[in-house]
Image (cartoon, rainbow, N blue to C red; front, top):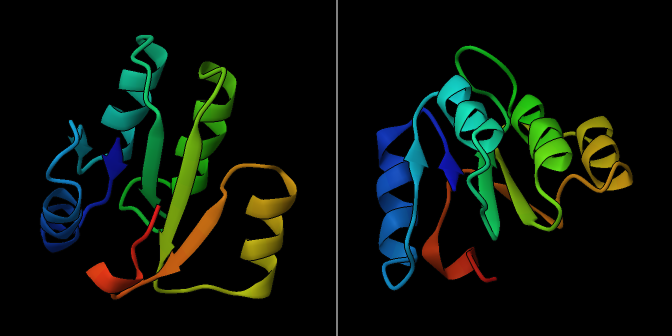
Length: 107
C-alpha cells in the first residue's frame, strides 16, 4: 500500500516495486478506508504530509487494523521529534527523505 498525494512519487514507487502488487492511494481517507475494510498489506509506504491529514494518522490506523505489517514513512520535512514519535511507537521501520531516489529505496 502506498499513500502519497504526489503523482510523481506514486509513479516512482510503482516503478521500483514493479514485480509486486501495489495498491496506490493519493488520498489518506481512501487509504484508511481500505485498512478499515480489512484489506491486508505486507508493506505500507506513507507520506508524512498529506493534504487532508497526516501520514501518521494512516500509520496509527494501520497499527489498529493490521496484525503484522512493515511501514516506511516518506518525508521532505524530517525532524528529530517526528523520528522519535514514529520509531518509539513502532509505527515504522524506516524513514526515507524526499526526494525519493530508487538507489536509496531498499527493503
